[in-house]
Figure 1 (cartoon, rainbow over the protein chains, first blue to last red):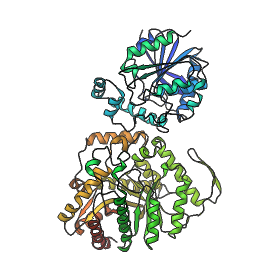
Figure 2: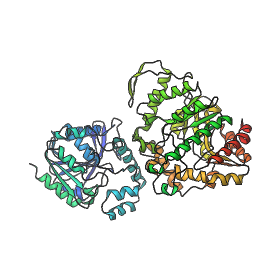
Figure 3: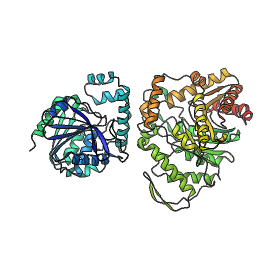
Figure 4: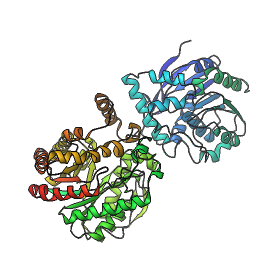
Length: 259
Length: 379
């Protein structure tokens, strides 16, 4: 089955949406780097699930409504987004910024969710565990620090973006700063309310993540009651990209175990 | 013409070999490289230079704000302004400027300026800026909201100076139940506000608006850009239906005078090259954090940068050639200033006569030469 590539309207906001697969619906919320292409990780999930991959409002070519001021607004938007998609249940998966949005959504309302998967999520800060500064990194540092496998970083650095791609990257950087600059990649209130996430949760982290250290997984595990933790060795900040098969397998095992 | 003696107060004893191991002289440069004893000497020397400028007949003496950097040792320029008020009588004291968006409560800026205006009995000139992009890394303030905060802080400060208090201010970033300035400013309706800027059409349009008519000062730009931005301001004023007055237009420039062109170039070289390459230069990611300028301006800047290619170290010769620095004999310097003045109608020259590692002795001779051989001819 081919991946459908459409726009999706919720209230006043239209976003880009990729979708493929069949089964229970699974919504993947991307990270601050922007809307990912439909890679091997999505392929694997789409074998078992109806996978929806929206591009966040404000990113790339999605609408950029002025009422989005912070991550809470994006989380509230996604509650509307889920409502508009029809009957539950949904599986929610979020990476990095998308993990933060997913957690903010889940502390507000898990009624429509069957499970939550957080891959190297932003949103919580642990004092003393130093994070990378993606906003000061050069393009080269960014590529090198986000991958464990430097061959993959080389590949990324060799890619020359088209003008359209460069414009999209820039829009993404602007939105990343709007949502994540200060306080840097976290919301002080979020950790206080993580106990309200009472649905089955999986947190996945690349052991060698140089943006958010994998030791952060413990902080999430300590606050969400029904949680499993998976640390993937020899892997940077984007396990679903760098270790697509291992990560997909682990996520599918978790999802398959849910009633 | 009116003349300003402007200081950045760079930390000259900086170990440049160490400096080059780091991405910039800003934010991430380890402060172990700062020696307080040498630093105290720097402050003393620089304040003496500023005071001396009054004696030499400069109309304004000026300081500015930068954070966490060897480029400028004035995170709190009002402290220096206060010291200058106590040691001078006639010169206007210009703080060019305070970075409004960095303040958690802009009323504090309004209060401090009002104090300086009272202390000096109306000798204060204020400058409103957003700060270089680097300041957003240093302060943690979100660059995405820089423009919004600047506009709102400006409105709040001007209201605090001019509206009878107490009143409430209802904004997006600043919400205050009580705004009620004690002291009120000495000058009425309020101290002059200057807008120093690298030049952007948005800033020019805003500064030139009839309800503001703020003097505009182009900084760190070659003569073509200075001409372009000042012309833009005049055109904008005409579109608003008025003619910009010469004192609304100015530019800031590192400047060095000696008896011959050759000597001036030789003596200015190290100071200029250290200013532009070691103190000021920072990577793109620090200079222009996301949101610091509008997406459209940013795209234009990226295009321009692509056309220019990656820059190696700038040489003093290049900087002099394109007019970013004015260096030479009194005749050469006079001609260069006159040329730009006649082309743009600008009346306000902001001189930087100490720059980079330039020594006290050379700085003082430069000041004296400028005051005796250049200034009187342009008055």
